[in-house]
Length: 270
Image (tube, rainbow, N blue to C red; front, side, top):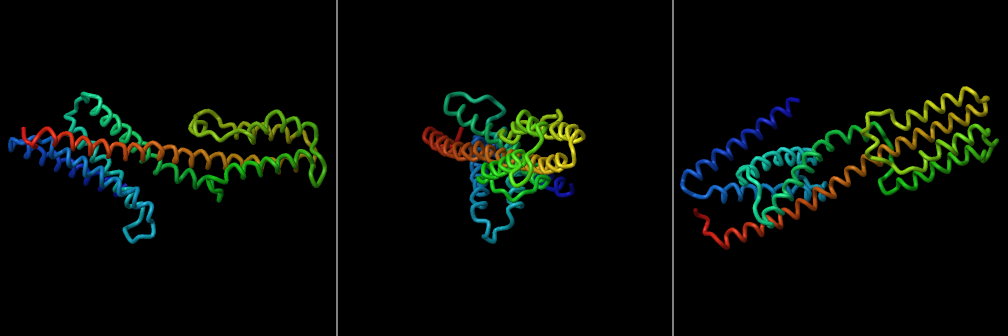
Protein backbone atom coordinates (compact mmCIF):
# COMPACT_ATOMS: atom_id res chain seq x y z
CA UNK A 1 0.00 0.00 0.00
CA UNK A 2 2.86 2.36 0.80
CA UNK A 3 4.47 1.66 -2.58
CA UNK A 4 1.16 2.32 -4.33
CA UNK A 5 0.83 5.72 -2.65
CA UNK A 6 4.44 6.65 -3.37
CA UNK A 7 4.31 5.68 -7.03
CA UNK A 8 0.94 7.37 -7.49
CA UNK A 9 2.31 10.61 -6.01
CA UNK A 10 5.37 10.46 -8.26
CA UNK A 11 3.11 9.96 -11.29
CA UNK A 12 0.92 12.88 -10.23
CA UNK A 13 3.99 15.10 -9.80
CA UNK A 14 5.26 14.10 -13.24
CA UNK A 15 1.87 14.98 -14.77
CA UNK A 16 1.83 18.32 -12.94
CA UNK A 17 5.36 19.08 -14.15
CA UNK A 18 4.36 18.26 -17.72
CA UNK A 19 1.35 20.58 -17.57
CA UNK A 20 3.50 23.36 -16.14
CA UNK A 21 6.18 22.90 -18.81
CA UNK A 22 3.64 22.89 -21.62
CA UNK A 23 2.03 26.00 -20.15
CA UNK A 24 5.37 27.81 -20.10
CA UNK A 25 6.05 26.72 -23.67
CA UNK A 26 2.64 27.93 -24.78
CA UNK A 27 3.19 31.29 -23.04
CA UNK A 28 6.31 31.78 -25.17
CA UNK A 29 4.01 32.11 -28.19
CA UNK A 30 4.90 28.68 -29.55
CA UNK A 31 2.51 25.89 -30.46
CA UNK A 32 2.49 23.71 -27.34
CA UNK A 33 1.14 20.76 -29.30
CA UNK A 34 4.63 20.19 -30.67
CA UNK A 35 6.06 19.82 -27.17
CA UNK A 36 3.36 17.60 -25.68
CA UNK A 37 3.26 15.67 -28.94
CA UNK A 38 6.93 14.81 -28.66
CA UNK A 39 6.47 13.92 -24.98
CA UNK A 40 3.66 11.58 -25.99
CA UNK A 41 5.61 9.97 -28.82
CA UNK A 42 8.80 9.49 -26.81
CA UNK A 43 6.80 8.12 -23.89
CA UNK A 44 5.14 5.55 -26.16
CA UNK A 45 8.58 4.59 -27.46
CA UNK A 46 9.80 4.03 -23.90
CA UNK A 47 6.75 1.87 -23.25
CA UNK A 48 7.75 -0.40 -26.13
CA UNK A 49 11.02 -1.09 -24.30
CA UNK A 50 9.07 -3.10 -21.73
CA UNK A 51 8.04 -5.71 -24.28
CA UNK A 52 11.65 -5.89 -25.45
CA UNK A 53 12.83 -6.27 -21.85
CA UNK A 54 10.61 -9.33 -21.38
CA UNK A 55 12.34 -11.06 -24.29
CA UNK A 56 15.69 -10.84 -22.49
CA UNK A 57 14.93 -11.79 -18.85
CA UNK A 58 18.54 -12.80 -18.09
CA UNK A 59 20.02 -9.37 -18.81
CA UNK A 60 21.01 -7.37 -15.68
CA UNK A 61 18.47 -4.62 -16.31
CA UNK A 62 16.35 -5.00 -13.20
CA UNK A 63 13.59 -7.49 -12.54
CA UNK A 64 10.54 -7.76 -14.76
CA UNK A 65 8.13 -6.83 -11.96
CA UNK A 66 9.84 -3.44 -11.54
CA UNK A 67 9.63 -2.82 -15.28
CA UNK A 68 5.98 -3.80 -15.25
CA UNK A 69 5.27 -1.37 -12.41
CA UNK A 70 7.07 1.43 -14.27
CA UNK A 71 5.19 0.49 -17.45
CA UNK A 72 1.81 0.80 -15.71
CA UNK A 73 2.48 4.17 -14.08
CA UNK A 74 4.06 5.52 -17.26
CA UNK A 75 0.87 4.50 -19.02
CA UNK A 76 -1.21 6.69 -16.71
CA UNK A 77 1.21 9.55 -17.36
CA UNK A 78 0.72 9.10 -21.10
CA UNK A 79 -3.05 9.20 -20.66
CA UNK A 80 -2.64 12.72 -19.28
CA UNK A 81 -0.24 13.61 -22.10
CA UNK A 82 -2.75 12.33 -24.66
CA UNK A 83 -5.57 14.39 -23.15
CA UNK A 84 -3.33 17.47 -23.16
CA UNK A 85 -2.17 16.92 -26.74
CA UNK A 86 -5.68 16.39 -28.12
CA UNK A 87 -6.96 19.33 -26.06
CA UNK A 88 -9.81 17.13 -24.80
CA UNK A 89 -11.47 17.24 -28.23
CA UNK A 90 -12.75 14.62 -30.64
CA UNK A 91 -10.49 13.89 -33.62
CA UNK A 92 -11.16 15.21 -37.10
CA UNK A 93 -10.29 13.37 -40.29
CA UNK A 94 -9.78 9.68 -40.98
CA UNK A 95 -6.07 9.61 -40.10
CA UNK A 96 -6.44 11.37 -36.75
CA UNK A 97 -9.49 9.28 -35.92
CA UNK A 98 -7.53 6.07 -36.55
CA UNK A 99 -4.66 7.30 -34.40
CA UNK A 100 -7.06 8.40 -31.66
CA UNK A 101 -8.91 5.07 -31.76
CA UNK A 102 -5.69 3.07 -31.52
CA UNK A 103 -4.56 5.04 -28.49
CA UNK A 104 -7.94 4.54 -26.79
CA UNK A 105 -7.77 0.79 -27.49
CA UNK A 106 -4.23 0.78 -26.15
CA UNK A 107 -5.24 2.69 -23.02
CA UNK A 108 -8.30 0.55 -22.27
CA UNK A 109 -6.42 -2.69 -22.84
CA UNK A 110 -3.56 -1.32 -20.74
CA UNK A 111 -5.82 -0.57 -17.77
CA UNK A 112 -7.42 -4.00 -18.15
CA UNK A 113 -3.95 -5.56 -18.35
CA UNK A 114 -2.88 -3.77 -15.18
CA UNK A 115 -5.83 -5.40 -13.42
CA UNK A 116 -4.98 -8.79 -14.90
CA UNK A 117 -1.32 -8.64 -13.85
CA UNK A 118 -2.45 -7.95 -10.30
CA UNK A 119 -5.26 -10.47 -10.02
CA UNK A 120 -4.43 -13.38 -12.34
CA UNK A 121 -1.18 -14.54 -10.64
CA UNK A 122 -3.04 -15.06 -7.36
CA UNK A 123 -5.78 -16.94 -9.23
CA UNK A 124 -3.20 -19.17 -10.86
CA UNK A 125 -1.59 -19.78 -7.48
CA UNK A 126 -4.96 -20.94 -6.17
CA UNK A 127 -5.16 -23.39 -9.09
CA UNK A 128 -1.68 -24.84 -8.97
CA UNK A 129 -0.56 -27.21 -11.65
CA UNK A 130 2.43 -27.82 -13.85
CA UNK A 131 0.54 -28.10 -17.13
CA UNK A 132 1.89 -25.84 -19.86
CA UNK A 133 -0.68 -23.94 -21.90
CA UNK A 134 -0.13 -25.96 -25.07
CA UNK A 135 -0.44 -29.22 -23.10
CA UNK A 136 -3.95 -28.53 -21.78
CA UNK A 137 -5.75 -30.58 -24.48
CA UNK A 138 -3.59 -33.63 -23.71
CA UNK A 139 -4.16 -33.19 -19.97
CA UNK A 140 -7.92 -32.98 -20.50
CA UNK A 141 -7.84 -36.15 -22.63
CA UNK A 142 -5.92 -37.95 -19.89
CA UNK A 143 -8.50 -36.96 -17.27
CA UNK A 144 -11.33 -38.09 -19.52
CA UNK A 145 -9.61 -41.46 -20.02
CA UNK A 146 -9.31 -41.90 -16.26
CA UNK A 147 -13.02 -41.20 -15.86
CA UNK A 148 -13.91 -43.66 -18.62
CA UNK A 149 -11.77 -46.32 -16.95
CA UNK A 150 -13.59 -45.80 -13.66
CA UNK A 151 -16.99 -46.19 -15.30
CA UNK A 152 -15.97 -49.20 -17.41
CA UNK A 153 -14.20 -50.83 -14.49
CA UNK A 154 -10.85 -51.21 -16.23
CA UNK A 155 -8.68 -53.24 -13.86
CA UNK A 156 -11.59 -53.86 -11.49
CA UNK A 157 -15.39 -54.08 -11.27
CA UNK A 158 -17.55 -52.02 -13.60
CA UNK A 159 -19.41 -49.12 -12.01
CA UNK A 160 -23.05 -49.47 -11.01
CA UNK A 161 -25.79 -48.37 -13.43
CA UNK A 162 -26.53 -45.27 -11.32
CA UNK A 163 -22.90 -44.10 -11.61
CA UNK A 164 -22.87 -44.91 -15.32
CA UNK A 165 -26.03 -42.90 -15.89
CA UNK A 166 -24.73 -39.98 -13.85
CA UNK A 167 -21.49 -39.97 -15.79
CA UNK A 168 -23.17 -40.21 -19.19
CA UNK A 169 -25.91 -37.66 -18.54
CA UNK A 170 -24.15 -35.13 -16.30
CA UNK A 171 -20.45 -35.51 -15.62
CA UNK A 172 -19.15 -36.28 -19.09
CA UNK A 173 -20.41 -32.95 -20.40
CA UNK A 174 -18.21 -31.10 -17.92
CA UNK A 175 -15.17 -33.29 -18.57
CA UNK A 176 -15.55 -32.96 -22.34
CA UNK A 177 -16.59 -29.33 -22.39
CA UNK A 178 -14.28 -26.46 -23.33
CA UNK A 179 -12.82 -24.23 -20.66
CA UNK A 180 -14.67 -20.96 -20.20
CA UNK A 181 -13.21 -17.60 -19.23
CA UNK A 182 -16.61 -15.98 -18.81
CA UNK A 183 -17.93 -18.58 -16.39
CA UNK A 184 -15.12 -17.91 -13.94
CA UNK A 185 -16.42 -14.44 -13.19
CA UNK A 186 -20.09 -15.20 -12.85
CA UNK A 187 -21.67 -14.64 -9.45
CA UNK A 188 -23.95 -17.68 -9.73
CA UNK A 189 -22.85 -21.01 -8.19
CA UNK A 190 -20.27 -22.68 -10.35
CA UNK A 191 -20.91 -25.82 -12.33
CA UNK A 192 -18.20 -27.53 -10.33
CA UNK A 193 -19.98 -26.87 -7.03
CA UNK A 194 -23.29 -28.10 -8.42
CA UNK A 195 -21.68 -31.32 -9.68
CA UNK A 196 -20.07 -31.92 -6.29
CA UNK A 197 -23.45 -31.55 -4.61
CA UNK A 198 -25.02 -34.02 -7.04
CA UNK A 199 -22.17 -36.46 -6.42
CA UNK A 200 -22.69 -36.16 -2.67
CA UNK A 201 -26.38 -36.93 -3.09
CA UNK A 202 -25.66 -39.95 -5.29
CA UNK A 203 -22.90 -41.27 -3.08
CA UNK A 204 -25.28 -41.64 -0.13
CA UNK A 205 -27.21 -44.28 -2.08
CA UNK A 206 -24.19 -46.38 -3.11
CA UNK A 207 -22.48 -49.35 -1.55
CA UNK A 208 -18.84 -49.26 -0.43
CA UNK A 209 -17.52 -50.10 -3.90
CA UNK A 210 -19.63 -47.42 -5.47
CA UNK A 211 -18.47 -44.86 -2.91
CA UNK A 212 -14.84 -45.63 -3.73
CA UNK A 213 -15.58 -45.12 -7.42
CA UNK A 214 -17.28 -41.83 -6.69
CA UNK A 215 -14.35 -40.65 -4.58
CA UNK A 216 -11.97 -41.43 -7.43
CA UNK A 217 -14.35 -39.68 -9.82
CA UNK A 218 -14.39 -36.65 -7.52
CA UNK A 219 -10.60 -36.46 -7.78
CA UNK A 220 -10.88 -36.42 -11.57
CA UNK A 221 -13.56 -33.74 -11.36
CA UNK A 222 -11.43 -31.58 -9.05
CA UNK A 223 -8.41 -31.87 -11.32
CA UNK A 224 -10.55 -30.96 -14.33
CA UNK A 225 -11.89 -27.89 -12.52
CA UNK A 226 -8.35 -26.79 -11.67
CA UNK A 227 -7.31 -27.36 -15.26
CA UNK A 228 -10.26 -25.31 -16.51
CA UNK A 229 -9.40 -22.41 -14.23
CA UNK A 230 -5.74 -22.35 -15.19
CA UNK A 231 -6.55 -22.62 -18.89
CA UNK A 232 -9.11 -19.83 -18.73
CA UNK A 233 -6.79 -17.41 -16.95
CA UNK A 234 -3.86 -18.26 -19.20
CA UNK A 235 -6.09 -17.76 -22.25
CA UNK A 236 -7.30 -14.44 -20.88
CA UNK A 237 -3.72 -13.22 -20.54
CA UNK A 238 -2.91 -14.27 -24.09
CA UNK A 239 -6.01 -12.67 -25.56
CA UNK A 240 -5.19 -9.42 -23.77
CA UNK A 241 -1.67 -9.37 -25.22
CA UNK A 242 -3.12 -10.16 -28.64
CA UNK A 243 -4.99 -6.84 -28.45
CA UNK A 244 -2.51 -4.70 -26.51
CA UNK A 245 0.73 -5.41 -28.38
CA UNK A 246 -0.56 -5.00 -31.97
CA UNK A 247 -2.32 -1.79 -30.91
CA UNK A 248 0.98 -0.54 -29.47
CA UNK A 249 3.00 -1.04 -32.63
CA UNK A 250 0.17 0.14 -34.86
CA UNK A 251 -0.13 3.36 -32.89
CA UNK A 252 3.65 3.93 -33.00
CA UNK A 253 3.64 3.60 -36.80
CA UNK A 254 0.72 6.01 -37.20
CA UNK A 255 2.26 8.42 -34.70
CA UNK A 256 5.52 8.57 -36.68
CA UNK A 257 3.53 9.22 -39.85
CA UNK A 258 1.56 11.87 -37.98
CA UNK A 259 4.80 13.65 -37.02
CA UNK A 260 6.07 13.46 -40.60
CA UNK A 261 2.84 14.97 -41.96
CA UNK A 262 2.81 17.75 -39.36
CA UNK A 263 6.38 18.80 -40.05
CA UNK A 264 5.79 18.57 -43.79
CA UNK A 265 3.20 21.34 -43.58
CA UNK A 266 4.53 23.53 -40.77
CA UNK A 267 7.78 24.83 -39.38
CA UNK A 268 6.70 24.17 -35.80
CA UNK A 269 5.47 27.67 -35.02
CA UNK A 270 1.95 29.11 -34.91
